[in-house]
Image (cartoon, rainbow, N blue to C red):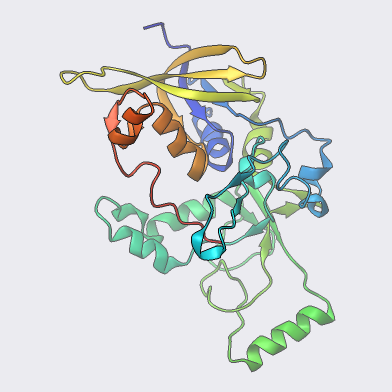
Amino acid sequence: MPKSIYDTVIIGGGSAGCALANRLSEDPSHKVLVLEAGRPDYIWDIFIHMPAGLTFPIGNKYYDWCYESEPEPFMNNRRIFHGRGKVLGGSSSINGMIFQRGNPMDYQRWAGDSGMGNWDYAHCLPYFKRMENCLAGGDDFRGADGPLIMERGPCENPLFSAFFEAVQEAGYPLTADVNGYKQEGFARFDRNIHRGRRMSAARAYLHPIKKRPNLTIQCRTLTTKILFEGKNPTAQTRAVGVEFSRSQGRSEKVYAGEIICCGGAINSPQLLQLSGIGNAEDLEKLGIDVVQDLPGVGENMQDHL
């Protein structure tokens, strides 16, 4: 096997990939490579950075993977659009810029599953606080010195006033902060917008540190396969590198001590399957060499919309 050039290769420059690249490259001796299939989030690109331009990137092949579901039999066989960011920053560069944490009870339910004990809300909360700088302030559940700056919508107009009056008349409560101690209720929402510009994961985590000499970011680079060694019954199989192609189409390989797959809810399982991890029966039908039979890969996706 060729000598590793990097300590860590991160597949995907989306929300998770940007945060990981920032943290892992804090050690100047640790060489990190980020491979992003999409384009850079150019500073002049108003369709990414200007909040009012948010409708342009969604469904646009230059920013979005433009995925669709299979025909849904209970929806008159319509195909349902699934927007996924294909740009540095991932879906955080094309989404609606509304910031809201999950409900604490959801994390408690996760923690009840085997091996998931550290996913309860008490364990997650310090990391939620560490990531954010909530300019509106708040209680002990909010952060004030993280890289992700967010502002709260003013909602100072007759329409919002009428709306808040209506929900109270209907019996629903108001709350000061949907990301604070009391989530239940209606309130002004937080937005990952700062000084009139989108605050994407790339802008929060990557741009401030992109000149670190131990960090390399390659855009327009599609990872096509994870490479493994030890693919036999007597050896422990481990990921050692990736195969990728750039815009010119030439296939290349790079090796590293650690491979982290951050392609998102759709692209990560797809890449694992293309690399031989998934339902063995399905992979064999497609002529893909099986590395690990894991039938759950690529199954059970649920879209919150």
